[in-house]
Amino acid sequence: VQLVESGGGSVQAGGSLFLSCAVRGSISSIETMDWYRQAPGEQRELVAAFHANATTTYEDSVKGRFTVSRGNGENTVYLLMSSLKPEDTATYYCDASGSTTFGLKYVRWGQGTQVTVSS
Image (cartoon, rainbow, N blue to C red; front, side, top):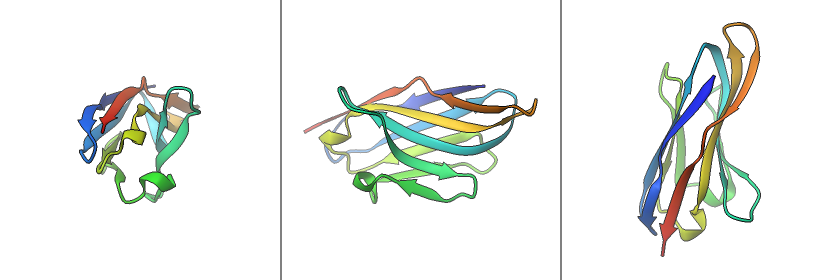
């Protein structure tokens, strides 16, 4: 099971960026797909989560600016980031957990993608 991230890049404050994360492999279920970020010298923090029951949760500083979503029947989670601020600059990682077709549980991380917001 692998997670493949795409998107990210550099943008000026107030701009938008779009991230995607696809789960590849022999999976039978995805329970949760999350987005984390880690700035240099900081701990990794949860930014947004898309739960199996289709509910979402957000870190307080991104509420109203970031939207996490998952396409129907898709093994892909998206993160739309709007009204970006310089403090959003970080490496963004997705993670996913669920079960494989062999009945084993998995937890996987994406490779990370850089988001840089300039003032």
